[in-house]
Length: 542
Image (cartoon, rainbow, N blue to C red; front, side, top):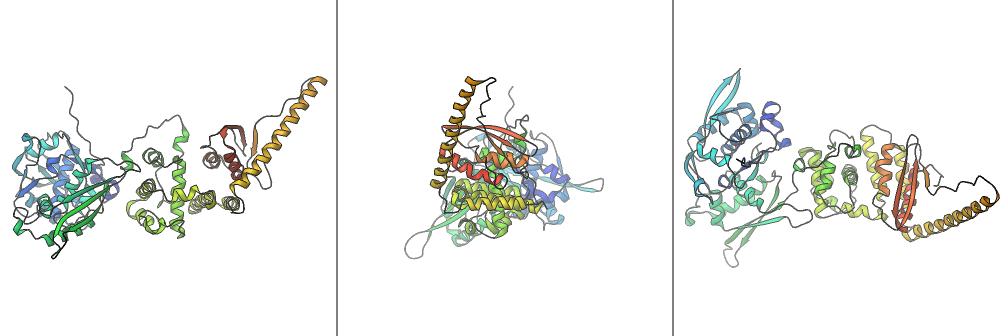
């Protein structure tokens, strides 16, 4: 018999509980829920607070991670860990009081397309304290209907436990609203460069019904003003959600009184969590594992992120090493306080906002958010695509800044950046560079033709025949250029070339050499001759 599919939780509450419960925001665990547990749920018992809702969801998530079949009679979680998951300012006594309220509350699941999955009067949880080797534990069990719903999920949405817990929600009805929006966010998938917004329009009565706001069952008793006030404040409670960004619009009717016609939420889907992007690594190719580089711990980004980003974001002409350089440029822009484009002031992952994201979310999340912004609306990418902006100089200066943060020498990179800036000066246009290149190519072809004719003459006069000159163009690189510099910087100068003119390039470094057959257009070759000069010794040409 084929086993039923059961969605896996993302991130581990068990490991967090054992090692560092306070890292819940960094780990950002997620747990799946069926639609029946996300919307249309009603309660009978004491009025539940945000903390009560959070504790209940954490207990379900922990049990599901321990036992995905939900067959165990009872479960147990460390009380200290549960307390910290709920929020940094929550006390153990608050948890115990919350568990008692949950025990006295019955819930009903009536919004389901499957009649067999509708239940009423289900006790939320039964919990008690246990002492195991002087460690306070919370033992708990669920009623069969809750276990049945979690055991089989024809459809589902993920709840972000750090967004629910960790003290991020303050309004009583925010958890119910978040669950409903999380379910609605599954209506479409994020696509790079596409319209990733979901528009949800509620009448005041409909929204009140969704979140069980006072007066939801009697329109005359519904205080629309208080409901609108909640809706406006709820946007702040939803700010920690990573799957989507929430905005609100209150639509009022024309005329006197300005009655509220509808309450509209717009969900802008975000790129998928980089940890969930699958990349098939070829372990025989070491180059795949040489992306990125060391940095100050505050700004260090895991190396596999760049390949995951290449697979996720569609930035024209950018490979994984280019995305890493783009990140260094944004980082240097933020640290220096010198904006390169207008986006520096207004974007969520540029300038001071980028540094704030690094400190609150971590460098990896900040880099991911920055790349998502560039994918949706290229700004820094377009700035660096304009050669008059000296993009190679900007990237080299950003790399020098990274090395300075590590205490490494950067004098060579500084000289190289100066060369790049000089070559990008407006006095030299692309047409000038192309003319120089074509003239040099004509001289080279004439020289090769004369040497070929001389070789034929010598062949008639004496043996052995002189060996014809190699067709490869040799570039003797400056001694400061390392193998890593060559692989990342020099190769990037021509890796995207394509055109009718083919050349064989040989590079000779201090302890390495490499040969590449490259096809490009005349304009690309002119650009290459200009850019490669920064990697050659002073006064030396190819």
